[in-house]
Length: 446
Image (cartoon, rainbow, N blue to C red; front, side):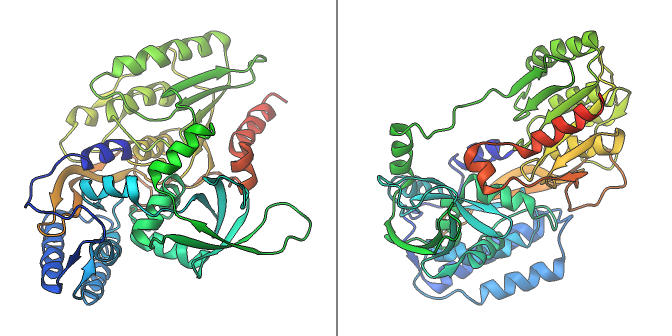
């Protein structure tokens, strides 16, 4: 299940006990927290498939974190103790979140960083600022926040986050799409943030230090709206054919076509018919940031790209979507040219299956970063609320396995060409991943 659907589900009111805290500063006794911790551990041990889990490592993590429970811990302090244990389940679909009232309170009043940061390699950089005066400009390196080094902050956040097996790029994707919220949840919050930074530009820049007031997410969004900083909403599917017919591009941002594959068909059928008529020999498929969705729509698009009968799900997969374990039809105008696939850590869940099948069934060239998912992932969700703290656990209970043998479980699809955008690329909206694909496509014409 994709992140967007997960977030919607987590906003629903779940069954559980009453009088859950509405603020992150609510405090609990050690016995209360131990009770919730035991409930969480039982739920995972009794229900989770644990396909990517090292049981001994997970048990050690739970024991270690349990020993940290003490009297008068706040809800947020409890979350920061429990989340690293849940992370050792090593499942990108197993998520622990704060209850809805707490999330709403933090959105309106939480003391968030007034900066949006990006993780590039092992370093932090400013991507956007929500400040009335540009004290720190986008592109500046953040060396420390409130005395914690950038490498320490990244490690703490990674320990708090979830991913399948040993995958790291999915965690990078999560940090780079929600850094401020994750920093507050996993690292801490403050009324004031002391930032040590290295300014961008200049031949020999000197480190600077500044103290910035916190801003809530609601305040930051209002600032972004007033200053035209919001990214425009883009369509789920976009296509383009170069004037010289050297290449075409197809961007799929999300397989959000549940119960309506025909909606996807109306978008892609004319595109592939046009490619066939033009005899276009190079297609660049952009899946970056596509974290999943409907497997029926994924299978439909794969029919055009694999170009011969194939099975989507393995016979070893859950019987859910059993009809996708049968041979899938090939549509008219299937593409048989050179396929370049742009990927990153956000390619997860259904998109992980999609990429695994392309890797297994075609000669597609992958460009970018390791995908967040691959041929197997957990799914079939149940939502649970811890009785006292109100923390919410999204817990899968089955496993979906694409028919793509020979790939590593718990790792994504490695690109044939590793291309990592720099902070300057991100700030200036340049795209070296797409540029590499276009260069490879053009080389075919020479």
